[in-house]
Length: 154
Image (tube, rainbow, N blue to C red; front, side, top):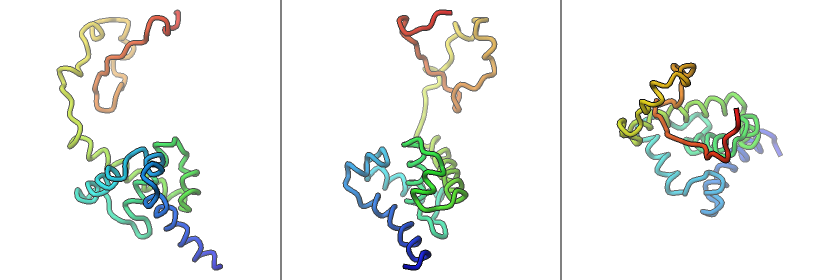
């Protein structure tokens, strides 16, 4: 067979295989239900955050992103799996990431009073070296404690 024809068939085949797989397999691959995936793709398109590329559909763009994020795959692995160039995978990963960051403020809201940093931490000189350190990208303080039996000795 012509290698170009085989490549075109395979690159369109893998996303179709995933998109048409059994619900349990789809969830294992994407870490979300098919209905949730479809709604996410629809929102990304409706808000004009993503559009079909020359040869990569929005569904495949999101599948590429999820393959990297959900399975901790390197972009090179994903490029091989989807028969795409490394540059293509990198570009669409970035586009999907930017689109999801743009959706974030629409769907995620925090009660700032509950997420504020406690005064005991603000006033404690022990934490001064971390004064301008970035904890979370959105500036939310998440109170977490390590159990005493798991804490390392100084």
